[in-house]
Length: 294
Image (cartoon, rainbow, N blue to C red; front, side, top):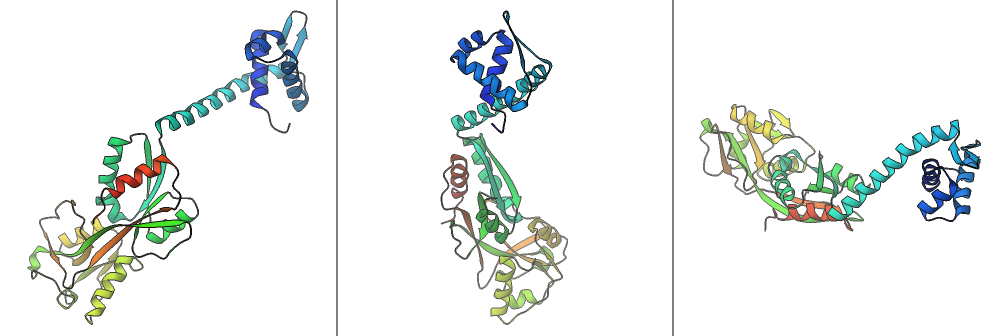
């Protein structure tokens, strides 16, 4: 017996509290020899006598008193742990780890989380700001449960990516510019730009949008935080190409938005492991998929 067995500790506590092996056996619904064996196994494991055995009953030794005191706390914590797990099973709750970009976190996830809180308050969602590649890596290694990722993505064994949203990318510009009703690559390339940080899917998409029209503008600054980009646009620093999610608040009055010509869209997917066998993850997925754009 390499480790201390919780059942043996419960037996020791019963003998100490009730004062005799016979009373402990009756309370625990065990045969008297089993109670004697449990205590003997603990004494052998620790190499010390734990109980004084007399005709009048059993009392703890010094070593037994120390062990009993610590065992009470250990068993109480074990009982609390089991009860917490059982409450979670009954409530069908749990913790879900979700990763997404700052853009999705700012405007899309709050709507899903608000709905989830109303229908499944027992589910705890932990959110991390991650790129699509980071999210997929964590999913593959079991460190994440759900990822909001840019599409398309290569197939990864054991993972599933569902198409989720396809939002238009708009030109966000200082209102003082008085832009045309539709913005072309040539018109925008001649003006100061605030670009998405290189390496992101949207950065590659916008670079391709310009390149197809023979334009290769150099941005004044690159960022990977949409709200900061909009703040710079409002300050007149430049224009930015950003996705516009339905239901997002109207931009600052100092900003005007225009559709692009040719049009550009940002596609997002919901990534998760192929087998999602827990209720909490399924509940979060359902809340997210309500926001799916068809």
